Image: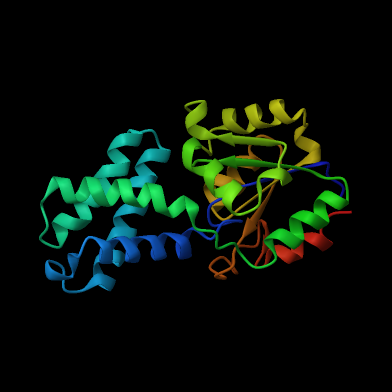
Length: 231
């Protein structure tokens, strides 16, 4: 496949959000000594993750402001488990935002694949719905910063994927044309179908093999597969 520009999502595509988030949530739970109030840490973290996904879906649609997402997910999760102290929710939120971006678990073959693509002369970029101030921390601490020419975070322009405008803006910044551009991400609607609607090819990153029956898109289960897709 002959392309010149490869755009990546960050969370759950290169940076292992689920593992890093789980580790941060667990560590802060212990630091706050919540065992005395919440008997089942595993159940709490599971409920938080479900609430977080629901609120992120609202945020992507423009139905929820950034600040409400950040604190609201902890308020809802803690309240569900009988803790209604706003100060605890604020502390958990602030601690999570400070700790999680500094964790560095990447998906297998992430660095090798980026090095391979860069060696082939491909221009690499990021389009993410994550928050600007934390995404750059993730990139830096994980050793990813120098791979990417353009890093576009949705909150910097007030537009979230899959809105066509964010893909057009990213290509404009990269001086790229749709026909020579590919978008790789873990979210079928947000990343793949969002890219397709502006003429880019979308590639679905599916490490958990959740979309094996989806035949209409190019799908990979390991980042290393990208090394053989582009020449």
